[in-house]
Amino acid sequence: MAVNKQKDVVILAIESSCDETAAAVVKNGREVLSNIISSQIDLHTLYGGVVPELASRKHIERINQVIEEALSEAKLALEDMDAIAVTYGPGLVGALLVGVAEAKAIAWGAGKPLIGVHHIEGHICANYIENKELEPPFLCLVVSGGHTHLVKVADYGKYEVLGRTRDDAAGEAFDKVARAIGLGYPGGPKIEKKAGEGNPDAIVFPRAKVAEHPYDFSFSGVKSAVLNYINGCRMKQIPVVEADIAASFQKAVTDVLIEHAVHALEETGMDTLAIAGGVASNGTLRRGMEEACKTRGIKFFYPSPIFCTDNAAMIGAAAFHEFLAGRRDGWELNAVPGLKLGER
Ligand code: KG4
Ligand code: ZN
View 1 (cartoon, rainbow, N blue to C red):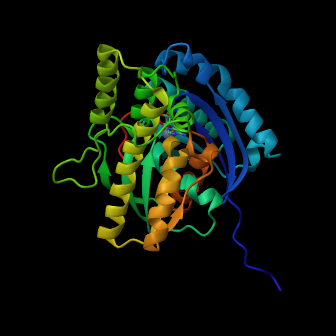
View 2 (cartoon, rainbow, N blue to C red):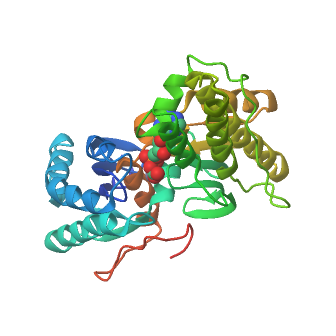
View 3 (cartoon, rainbow, N blue to C red):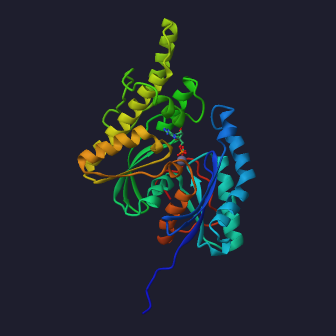
């Protein structure tokens, strides 16, 4: 008897919004056939942060090879693809443009549909890759170097932003504090490592609230408090214990992230939480969130670290749902550095 099986959808996805040149082949939005990431961290470390012009130039140098590797690791050719997906915003305009121009050229040359993907939507959809049972609706905390968003995922492709940062993103705060205590770039993993040797209760840094906006965040205050604390130590000629600063800072930031997410879960009555973005690979955040969810009977999901930081597999995962919804972009697709979530 013939089985009525839906045809597989295989997508080549490209990501170049910041400092990783990435390409991936993703089947049916959840199965990663290849995930190639060429990081520029070594280059930007020399300057203490991402230099946009250098990022674009490096993307141009690397992108063709990264795409070839993604296809060859998946043991597939361009003809086998059902669509070409690319991050078109938000991000650094020059960096985004490299990916968008490349995706347009490939899609046009191979006669394939083109799908522009929102970078944050990609981070959220990274959760679908390893958590096959995860389906909307759920609440997602997106914490990366450029964004801190508390998002209600009502359905595939349907997002409602409940809260966002008013100033620095969570990852940005990690990066700035790491620089202040001399740990270098990128700060998140370095702070986490250093914090492992310190006492999280040694120093009480502020946990900011935004009046009348319980789901919004503000991290510039905690960053300034760390800088003031370091200056104070130096003036009083008392030793600066980097490990205690790292641990106490990390605790202050993760406490706020957990508290806001729990509040939103309680207020909306949602029973599922996911976290996403580079900061979502932080162990203190994961463990704290896991504990908070467990005691409240909330299902908790997070991606492996490789799918938390920027990658193209997450873009392929997001593009699948756009593909099913019939969304196709034209050759006029352009980079949109300030693209808002849910904006088309
Ligand atoms: O998602 P991502 O790769 O890029 C953006 O879209 O911004 O996130 C990068 C950010 C950086 O700020 C980095 O310091 C932070 O994620 N990060 C971490 C950790 N790993 C990366 N922050 C805290 N703990 C970590 N383990
Ligand atoms: Zn990102």
